[in-house]
Image (spheres, rainbow, N blue to C red):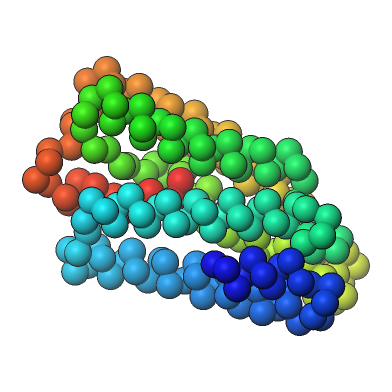
Length: 196
């Protein structure tokens, strides 16, 4: 994570910093996905992993969108709008707050993703990738990169709002007792990747 941040902050100093940052981002995203797949197939899911893994995903996304929105570290021609940052960060804070509230109220450990949450995470990763690629795509075809990055930003913002609603409904359903509580000895019911 640290090299990724340093590279984004030094794009003006080193011309290839953006490409190096893009490579690191891709490696982090792919390794996290592979780790999740292996954990499920090998039944190596743990409570600690179920908390730390999605938390790491959220830190990666939040750091990326914030840095790519700031004047000094944004990609020229494809800076992420402040309102997109607010929606993305707000969605992740909403999920974290919901987890804490449910745990405090029910004393039960509950991490569960929704389909729209997974789609939103994929959308966020695609958005960051398109932003990092924007100057290269712009050079290849008339502002293609900037347009794709802007479209992805709008799509992610919309998905984030839908994800907030879906997680709110899921949390309320659980609190109302309409959803089956997580049994302490059944790790299989815990989604290791709460990417939403």
